[in-house]
Image 1 (cartoon, helix red, strand yellow):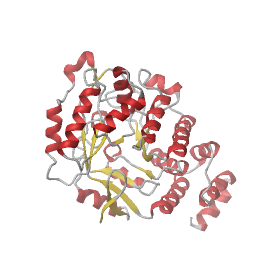
Image 2 (cartoon, one colour; image 1 turned 60 degrees about the vertical axis):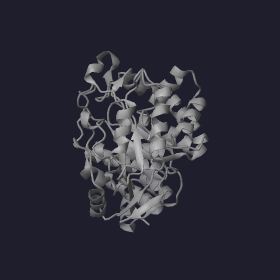
Image 3 (cartoon, helix red, strand yellow; image 1 turned 135 degrees about the vertical axis):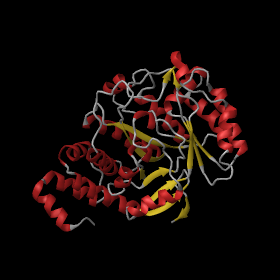
Image 4 (cartoon, one colour; image 1 turned 180 degrees about the horizontal axis):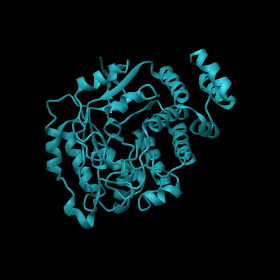
Amino acid sequence: MINSAFYNKVLLENSELSKIAEKVIQNERITDADCLQLFEHGSLAFVGALANHVREQKHGDITYFNRNFHIEPTNVCVFSCAFCSYSRLYAHKEEGWELSIDQMLDIVKSYDEKPVTEVHIVGGVHPKMNMAYFIELISKIKNHRPDLHIKAFTAVELDYMFRKAKLSTREGLEQLKAAGLQSLPGGGAELFHPDIRKVIAGDKVSGEGWLEIHETAHQLGMHSNATMLYGHMETYEHRIDHMRKLRDLQDRTKGFNTFIPLKFRNANNDMSHISESSTNEDLRLYAISRIYLDNFPHIKAYWPMLGRQNAQLTLSFGVNDIDGTIDDSTKIYSMAGSEEQTPTMTTEELVTLIKQANKKAVERDTLYQVINEF
């Protein structure tokens, strides 16, 4: 239970907040209006205490991580999203990279003697990297290392692949699943609301399209993650709209593993004039998402984006997953100005970071099956 002195203080400060606290303590779902109250009037201490209560009810002091690595096939992209610091337009592809299937298989083989459990494959939308190309890639990865879980392709990449191949979402996902695809990452969600999406990412799949791809994946027995890009030009109402659509889909399918808030970084992109959110606002967003997304089992802090110290702080604000070892195999956030310019941590470093926050470190696989406890 939440500390009684804290709860009495809330009663004196704001009766609406006290009603929300009572709902959370009674395991009742909060409304969109409640969520707006938390954003507009909930102090960091208040939302943090409520989120930590939810976290402890669901997971105790456990904090999950996994041993993974990323493959980014290309940063050449047909799209030009205003927030993106990573991609290079196809017309200027000399500034980017394009990995061959053999090069990507060499990356996989470099982990043959290491106890990694997941490969995460995402990148730009390259017009020459089509369905046949990626089916060959994941088939060869699965044939080489059958135990390695393949989590790959954002809904943006999938939408382009399927449209180019003239396949329905279901047909395309069925073919990729048969080749070895096991789950989807959460990227490409950005902000679902069309008023924001048309400004920051107007030329790629809509919010409705993103949701439809993930719902179809869930229907086919594949789990996925969900993200939200925050801290740029959106309002609290836009954030709530985004999370409500995720919560509604999760009610129908129960196919999401985790929610990952992604902090907007303003270096080297077309939105560099927008200031980044403060650490306090980051923590409030993590906490409120933990409270609102009651049907999501996990909330993840992606440490290469936040930095390891700030990610550690989130463990007291509802977060129970800190992602993986990564091994310096992603450039998406380092190119956008993240503190983590060389995003790699050993298992020992991750475990130490978690224990320093007075949490129990548990290694998981992609689907949150326990591998080791530390």
